[in-house]
Every structure is written in C-alpha cells, then in structure tokens.
Length: 226
Image 1 (cartoon, rainbow, N blue to C red):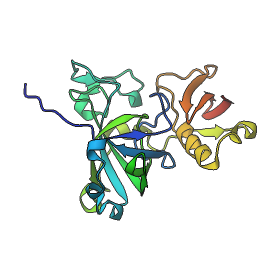
Image 2: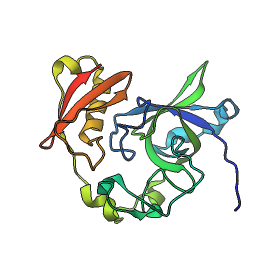
Image 3: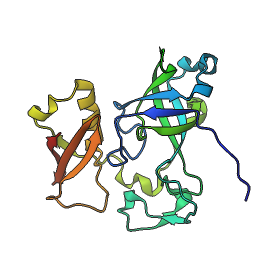
C-alpha cells in the first residue's frame, strides 16, 4: 500500500477540550469562535495574501483522537442511533481508512500578534481544541454550493433542535457571546442519539466551564455551570 506524509500546518483553538459536546457538523453553531494558529514553518504572512477576500474556508484536518491502524467498511452513524451500520464512505464518521475531516467555516478576520504571528479567527468550527489542520482552501460558491443536493439518511433529522432552558443565575457567568454559542450547541442535542433517559445528567467542558444538563420532552435543562 502506498503511503504519503502530510504536514500539520496549524492547530485550531476552540472552547472544547474534549470531544463530547462538539457540534456534529460545522456551521450548526455559527457563533462558536475558533482561532487557527500556524506552525512556525508556515507562519508566513505571504501565505495568507488574498485570503481576506473570501467569506468562508474549507479546513482539512486530522481526527487526532481517532487515528487507528485498522479500518472497517461499515460504521454506526450516531444520526441513526448507533444501531444501524452504513458504509464508511457514506458517512462522516471519524473512523476511516485515513482519519481526515473536512469542515466549512466562516472567516472572521486575519489577526496578528508577536507570539502567534498572523492567525485566523473563524466561526462555526466543529473541532476540538488543538486539532491539527492539514490544509486550508477557500470556499467557492460557484463550485462548492449545490442547492439541489440531497442529504441521504443524514437528512432524516434536519431541522431537529431542542428548546434550551438556561437559568439566569447560571447564564450570567458567561459573556453574551459565549452564552449565545453555548445555547446553539445545546439546542443541537449533544447526547448520543441512542440515549434518551430523562433522568440522566450529561456534562461536557466548554470555555473553561463544566456544563451539566438533562433532557426531557424535547427540552434541555441546564442544571449547573461549574
């Protein structure tokens, strides 16, 4: 089998230190902010020349927490409750022959600092903090946008969202921007699709806080923000 090497050109920094809670796809929580910081070898101003003219970017990245030596031709998509197998190439599962992900994000700005050099602020990323970025390409509406496209089995839950109950005494612990982003994340229902216990308390880390919640009758109730 032929093998080729790829280089990590950057890493993205987000509010998610662990996998649980991250939106299932990019763009579902468009208030989430990430910062793409280039590795020293690629920290070259000229490499970003012209990028500010694009509103969106494709990120090609590595599922760094799902790298395996073996692969399976079928996987259990969470979208189907984890109970039905589909072909790996018909899914966006992280468990692939090559652990590579693809995300479309909105470019907010190109920033600069002494420590980081030139870096990118983006919105809507579905990546864990520290995820390796392998490449960045501009999103081109004329080529990349297909309004007539169909979603296959992944479209069965399009439009699904939860009402989020967030007590004011907890909400005030977050900045307005972080609060809006977190509500978007929670409305997408971070739970595994096969779990629906109204008494179970779930939790994940977000922006330095431990968020705890439960779900009952289509509503998500935040019960703690530690």
